[in-house]
Amino acid sequence: MTQTISSAQRGILISDAAIDQIKSLCAKQGKELYLRLGVRQGGCSGMSYMMDFIESSSIDEKDEVFDYDGFKLVCDPKSMLYLYGLVLDYSDALIGGGFQFSNPNASQSCGCGKSFSA
Image (cartoon, rainbow, N blue to C red):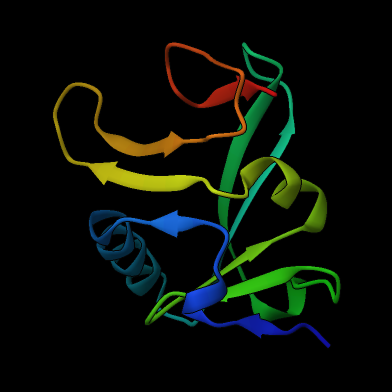
């Protein structure tokens, strides 16, 4: 059974602005969803971030589930190796707005901020 990790033990930090945006996007879906955050091969720097809403039935028993006061974030163990310590922020600026990833594990990031190498 997947265990939900308390807020004091989270390895991924999410700013208040990002939490508000995620909650807003989730509410528009009209059902309880979880946010899956992970990495995959690809992007201009070798690895790219991925974010998607999933239903609870898509959670694997090996996934880590983090509680963020109103929504839950899911991350697979392999991605967690690259994302531990990540800060997810959100900006509504006209230029450069959207979700922004600040990853201490990245040795190099691309200009768009959506991919990295480790």
